[in-house]
Image (cartoon, rainbow over all chains, first blue to last red):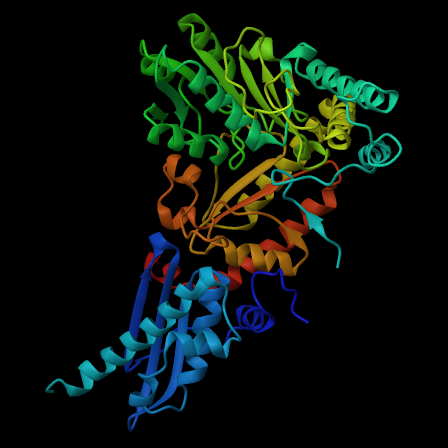
Length: 131
Length: 388
């Protein structure tokens, strides 16, 4: 049972301790960098896209446990999704997938959504620009 | 897993002997010290005994000690009490930018009520310059409040020199001694202070009790109005068990303080040396020598404090960070910013504060575990790459 007084639930802690998809990506199709070290959170998200489907996602994050856990979760959620579907992933969906975040940490899920959107926009800007 | 508690600046475990001394005052000796029958007078006697012990520890007279609910209340009382009693004399208060919030927030409040507050800067080691204090004094200055030692970075301030300046200028001088009383020698005459805040739970006493030293003749308004307890300064039935506990904690502090300070300073230096050797891009915060015997505070570049803390917690190690990110506010430590740390570094601070139950093995455990944690978090940090 999760201790009601601990800051994070078990799922958040599990993703913090064993984050999925950590690392940089060689030749990513889209990169999103959001946050500011001055505020204590920076997320970098890389995606690889094949035929409109995200086939790989990786991240690097400087931040609190919630920032790391939401980065990990969002990379899991986008894998295998079509780009237009991935664009619909909201910060709320990321937080829900982690069984919830403490109110003070909701901004971390917003950051994860922003990182994803920014990576996809980066991909779209490249794929639609003339060669 | 063995728990290693290294957050004694936050709070300390109440000594079993202290708890034992407190227990009878909940039951057999439950009387109200204001009652004139024997139950009451027994309680009164125990309260006065504790008062004498606190006074003796800091070189004061019993009548100069007012019991409070803790350090925060003592700081609140000192500042508001002097400010509102001396309004007609002046409205200027001098403090430092690295005070505990128990002082800073009171100053901000007073600032919003018409008082003028000067927040003095500190140098990169966290020291207030006595000359700055001298220069800041005006004809309107009624109070100077500079902490004895900083709770985050452990720097011990030149309180004696500042006390001398305050006295020469005829300005009241308060010091928040929550981190020093019971740990290093504190004498109100040597420090030349008029007011001094004490908290019991920082030196193995119970939570919810503290004291304010008020030098005889200091003009301050009552803090809590009511039944006239604490010489009409702080009304409300005395928290007898807690006050007895504070007295008992003082007894032990008197006996063990010097030996413990020496022992903890040795462990502190070993921990500092080990951290600097085993981890690169790590910096010691605070002063190299004018430092609390139990305080280690470092900045670990490229990683964030809360991640460090939770990773240490998984290994059974309790530490603290200057970053309040774990709390409601994402602001980095105001103390580290005042010392000149860039905000992104101020997010990665780590504080270990030693206590009487810590052994060399605890220091070794930190040194064994932390380098791996830092390496793991740095491997996922986008900041490291951009620095290379």
